[in-house]
Image (cartoon, rainbow, N blue to C red):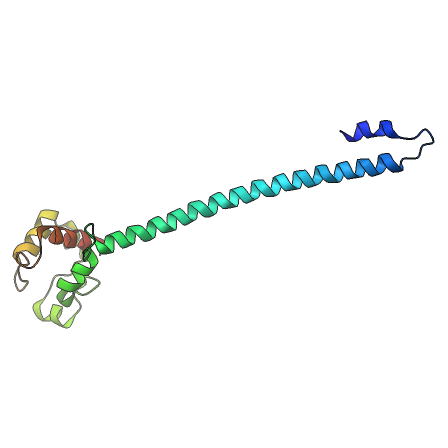
Length: 154
């Protein structure tokens, strides 16, 4: 029922008490319904934003966990690098460690290393180079690939 329709309930004496009260109630209910609808719309928008953000955060955390664990669930690329390479090359790859300075280890963050082909990185890790030992007997081919990919992230 619209507000205009409520005017038909006016008394002939001009007393608008009941009609006015009904009109006010209808208007209040109508405004309340609009406000409720707006609150629901806003709540849905906020929920969608929160859900998308949560999925993004969870995905990012999962990707980091996957990268740190490796695809097999065993020691991941970072752990393999730290165990086998960080003593000379440092955790950050800059070779600024006592052993790295002693053996003149390559800075893995250098442009020369960044430009090196994947095949060259795999060959150096597998066969060794200068004072760097071969890792062919210590690591699997997959672990060596994981380390070479990790070096690219340094």
